[in-house]
Length: 215
Image (tube, rainbow, N blue to C red; front, side):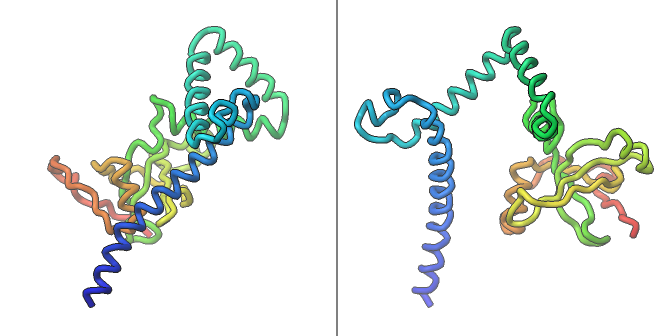
């Protein structure tokens, strides 16, 4: 029995380490592909006679940072506007580009509100609770046809949070949580094994009451 317990303890140590190194190796290997765009004389093989892993990561970070620096000034904004105008003339490319751009602007922009708040709601049936992330308020025709005030919620799947469900639910059926998005993701990915930290703030009045979801 002790041997089995030691084996499981070893697995609990090595599995997270192995997966972490595997993910890092995949990311570094993918980003290192950016070195293929450089002339052979500029690559590490020409400097030291061998490939140095991670140089592509530095190159990618430098390119992204330089792009942001250029786009932040007047000339860069004009170039970006010209580029987007050019893409807007290509039917299929236009749809893909602007769809992806809207999502990335919403998720990564400093003034964006998407995925900034973890919430608790009843899903997939009354009495069953899950954790989701606010994606914003509906707009356009969707907002006009929905009764009352509604919010968009993304419910990630376990243990793969990149897939999930998008729901439009009444705002009063959603409970905003004090936990951070990172803590909520850990809780979801671990299937509830890693609980979030307790918040020091005490709910006032009836704030701690759960809303009732009507079937």
